[in-house]
Image 1 (spheres, one colour):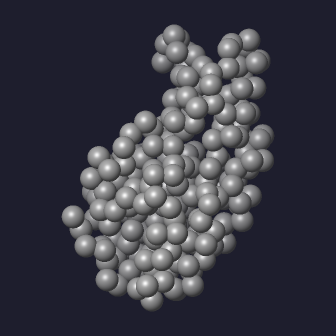
Image 2 (image 1 turned 180 degrees about the vertical axis):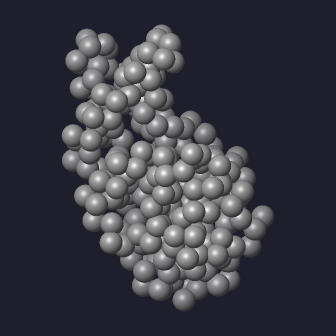
Length: 223
């Protein structure tokens, strides 16, 4: 297990399921699309669990029997519907605002590494009010590869001028841990996110959090 960095410079986060609870708006878009084509709307709990895997996984909940090509053809309309309702009910998870304030209060930098398409990421971060605060924002289409590849994490470190060995990567999906470890960061898995049906304790993270306050406390103690 990697030791917690003694001279921490910053923290990188996954977005949906880690910083933001966006499942309600993502589900609302799927519900509208189902109604447009007269398909039964899947249960919210089923959709929420797969949010971290992106639009195709969300659509697969409602269209389990169609081929991959047909499913892919549904994605543009889904993203259009989602963009229309994005941030209506999306909000930071309990304790996240305090955690970000603690990071900034210690003079550290924070950023976002998400697999969400860039046009949605940028608009959502702007609507939430974080655009001027995040030192780096790397989306799923910023590079030819996305998490679990470490390249987006390393790019975020470069943008924020962070040494990977002195940085944390925090996420709610096994791919976050994989990307963070491969990039040389201290990895933190969270239990409050969508989890994709997995157990964060089995992902090999350096630390598993039950609540953002645990990390907030750790930063304040280290100050």
